[in-house]
Each structure stands twice: as C-alpha cells, then as structure tokens.
Length: 205
Length: 75
Image (cartoon, rainbow over all chains, first blue to last red; front, side):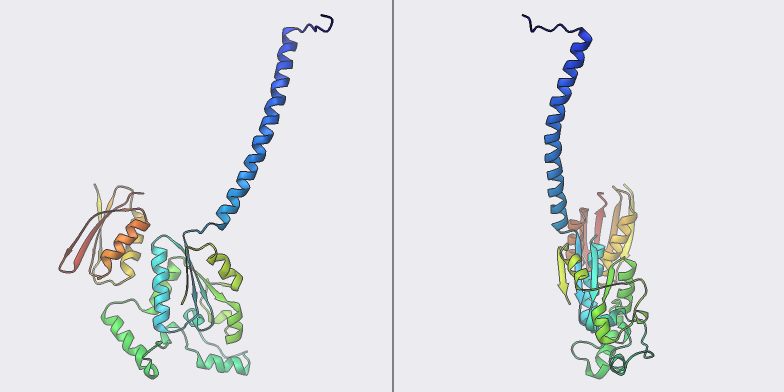
C-alpha cells in the first residue's frame, strides 16, 4: 500500500474538476469540429439553393414583347418575389429616357437615329404597318383600360424591381448612361448568371 | 373581424394582384380584404396569389362577371 496517496478533500475536488474539464474539452472539440463542418455544408447548400427570385433577360424591344416582360416582372414582384430584369440589345429601348447625338461616332449616331426614342415610341412585333400598328394597339389598350408600357415600367421601378442594363450591348448600340433611366444598375453576363443561378424562374423575352 | 374593401373593377391583369399585394401589406393578421374585380382571369389569379403568398381565400363569388374575393391575412 506504499503507492497510496492521501489527499485532502479540497485537493480531491480540484483533481476531479481537472479530470472532468479535460474529458469535457476533448468531447467538445469533436462536437465543435463537426458543428463547423455542418455549418460549412449548410452555407454551401443555401448558396446553391434557389431563392424566391425571378430573373428576366429582355432582349426584344417591341411594345408587345416588352409589355409581356413587364407584366410578368410586376406580377412576380406582387407575388412576393425578388425580380431582376437584364436589358440587352433591343431591350435597352425600355430604359431609354432620352436620345443624344453629340459626342458619338458616325456609326453610333446612325444607330441612335434608327432606334426608337423610348418605350413610348416602340413598334409592335407584328402588324406594325409602318407605325400604324402601335397607334392602333395603344388605342385598343386605352379602350380596355390596360396600363400603358411606360406606366408598367414606372410601376416596375416603384415595386423595387432590379433593372440592369447590359454594358456590352450599350457599347455596341452606342447608348450612354445619360440616355437611360436613373436608378438602374449596370452589369454584364456574370451579373445576370449570378442572379439567374439563384432564381426559380428565368425567362428570355 | 375587421375588413378592408378594395375595388379592382375595370382593372386588367396584372393590376388586381398588384393592388391586392399592396393592400395586404398594410393589414394586420386576422383582417380580411374584400376585393371586387371584373378581370376575366381574376379567379385563377387570386387563387394562385393566395396559394403563393400563404394567405387564405375565405370566399369567392361571381355575379354576372363582377367577382368578389374575400382574402384573410394569415401572416
């Protein structure tokens, strides 16, 4: 019995506490490690999980196609979704508030001359009849108390729909930021894909 | 139970759901919104809206094209 050690009560308590701490810490380290692994996985999953979001590419620039795009966008926003619209090529007309010629190259001036002045002056995709079609459709829409395209665009802005103009097509069409609506965003294909990858709905109009 | 009325008669798609969405945001849970509309797609649209937004359509009637939907704000 020579290796018997006599401990006072306080020493015994201290020793037990120390042993318990060691054990608990060892166990906790395991738990913390697996918790971190789980948090990492959840983070990756939620990053890749679709949000309640709709994304539209607006490529066309006619009254009817733009009207369809804005109706869907406004509807989605009213159904609680986050909505992003990306305007490229002919679709840029929807964002045009103004047309300028100064400071542009000859090619850009020619494109500017041929493009509509803005959403109030767009042709229809069918039955345009040298500009008679849009007038006729505007008349029919007023008769039936349907919102005009400019009103739908204003409504989309009011509802906080994110509108992004494609810089690359602005370059091709010679469109400057000064000619487009205020309070819009600018971006490229990655901007669209970033939002589209998180969307439940994505459309090309 | 308190109720708020919303007149959407004469409005076309998508305006009724735009107005419903706006009006519902202002309501407290338990309050109902009575919507009157003449849009032919109103029934399908209001049903889809209620499902998507997790609200409750407590009644729907159609008298000669004038439709009345009562939506209860759940949350």
